[in-house]
Length: 117
Image (cartoon, rainbow, N blue to C red; front, side, top):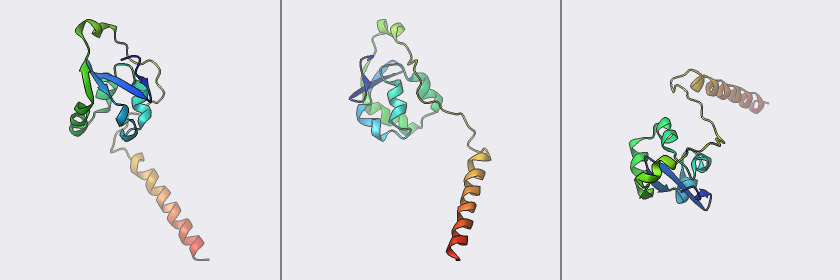
């Protein structure tokens, strides 16, 4: 598994199952970097922290290629190089809608100003 951590072959571990996500890299809604940074290691914690939907969990089953042998489970290390960090945010936070709303108003005013000349 550890050797499959590049764009031509990306494998990850989730709950001791081995997933070949190479063909899913470009389709991943969070971007391929998210999967690539977990490549070759145990991505269980990151996968659960994001809170994937039931559909995502069902889809992930199509990428299972095997299961980690019980003797090897203690040897698995989590990826240490984090290239991308995520910010935990509350989806109802006012900044999620106020900032885009202000930007839209500014753009609309600029358009109206320039188109009236």
